[in-house]
Image (cartoon, rainbow, N blue to C red):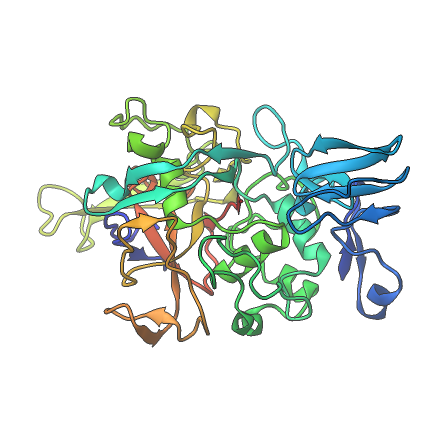
Length: 428
């Protein structure tokens, strides 16, 4: 993203098998007829026993029998001595038992951060009002939402690939991954046509460039997944019982709410200090292997005789400059989120300009509907018969300092897979 000009927030520039998930470390892969041979549903607990359904309002039956279990939202209930015994689950309740989110039910879902924790851990954005880009003409208000502490890792995405999800063979459910206050913002059936055919095709699509993905689990499991198109990021979050954050939610996290921070770690909020101990940027996380040269833009030596200025170009950046998630705690945001700036820039739910900015914004999202090849918005906000482009924030591992400012936004085409772009999920 270094080569592109940036505008203010929402004034953006362009960015050029099924699986059994259990508590074990191994992911069992099957294909074709094998998947019909009694393989448990990926996101359910084996040997669930006698599971009782809660009422529509989450209410448990007034009486129970020994050994029965139930879920009421995130509360797990088990029947002991004829009465329900309840436990609030840290992540989710499945078949009456507390379970990690689907992407963290194997070994690679643990150990993220400088102080190792679940790679699916979240911290709450308390909600409130703030100014997008500090501009009084574009106020926004969001409700409380849980935002994942970390960018989605290679290991978590590997569980998704192994599950068979995110493919034409097993697309997300229509409407899944929606923002609860924005009807119609979930998965659109027309998007299925742009998914990989099957898990093998999905896995093969994730390589190239400076990809963090490897075909077999290895040293990159706790690095952020990159080179994932927006549709697959959306599909992953929906599969994991979550969704992409809205542009307003991401900006709230980056700004520290009404603090309006220059960088997520800025204290005071106007502070512009940025170092490689706070963020992975400018290819400086690993010992630099790059070399740089400065020349006149017209190709001559860079000196006082330059007619139209100098240009610095560098080579040697590599995926070694992408940090494992959460290992730079001095760059943490106000609400506890890591790598909001640097490492990989992060996709959101929102269509990018020329989509009109929704104002005033209360839990707003400029969401995509219809065929993404033709549903992009034209210069007046109408369907322009163009590729859809989505808002990206945060700057990446190979970006310069200004690219990491909270007010700096970018956009990415729905089908583009970039070395410097990844994502994290939000949970309602």
